[in-house]
Image (cartoon, rainbow, N blue to C red; front, top):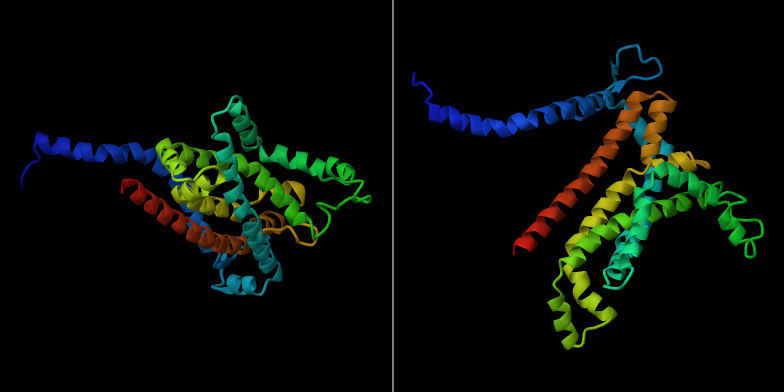
Length: 301
């Protein structure tokens, strides 16, 4: 049997060193993320509710059959879809327009950047409470619209308005974040391209359509996927402003999961809802990774 030489030990040490640095983080992730995720996957096939002192009972696909027949789940899934359709297009287009605006080399533009980014650093709890006051029956919005709607608009108490009122808060909170992503992309575009386009007659708004939008496609796709994932996981706004009401009109799939787990103590059913949510987010994440890889290939080319 050949003994390892000093050179072999050096090579082994060099190969193991990166994994030794990763080991603490992997242990923490294993205890706080991976192991709970595996437990949740197992519990989705069991009956574990109400009396949490008892051991889970294996029930197979019973929870999934219940989920298929649950009208509230399908309503929350539909509400989440409406959230995506309503929020994502705005968070893709509006931040790009803001980024183009604040990318101009004008005096005081840094103040505008800071103003647009301020909602991002505000806690969602604070933002939700503030907007709840604005939406109140005697709040600022109804006072401003008193001449048009004397009785006021039931922003958070009507099934027709509740979900869209919360969506407005999500848009307001996310504009600055996605604006910064676009701004980074805009500042990577050489000014020579715009100067050459101006000689060819492409100037003003047209230059953004001819040059900015095509070159920003990787960023647009990235923002689309990120905002879609965030919209799927929306919870804080719902919890603070509407509690899922009225009549489940603003209840999203994440809030329904929380309600089943912590209000009804139906842990196994909540894990089943979480598994469905995980599959949805996994699909969106795969799309994001594909977009990132394509964007990297375009940059390399």
